[in-house]
Length: 199
Image (cartoon, rainbow, N blue to C red):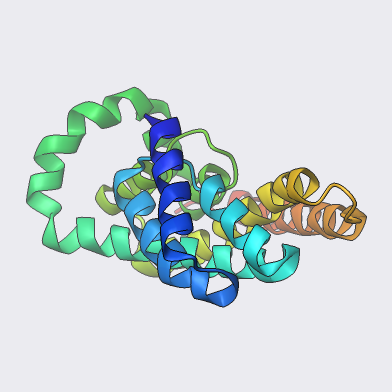
């Protein structure tokens, strides 16, 4: 199925002859479709954007498109489709019961992790968040940071495939610093909670 979708996307790009920033006419709607239906991996969009716009611009555009899709799907499921979604998706979410518990226990930190690594599809992360107790503001922050982390990581991987001669050491080093800072904030927040006196 995924290969067929990727083939269809390639045909669409060839038929429209879009390139450079004009490719966003195609990749932003594709990001929204991917965020809602999860028919193909988000790395497809990252690769398209990087190949059209270069490493840095392609990553920035992918990050913005991914965050827009994550927020749009979250609010779509939370408001418009809330009742239908709760009925239809509960059975599917049983597969991710462990992660549902982590989202309830760790909130935005679990979503950042799930956005960074493809443990579950993007659309399921949004669905899961929509029915959890996480606040919209915390979800927005977690999606911004988690998508940044995801795009950064997969941008490094895809750029080495698309542009084998490009020097990605600055990207790798800056991503390592970003991860260390993120872990530092996580442990600082958790330590503050553990030290807080229980009432």
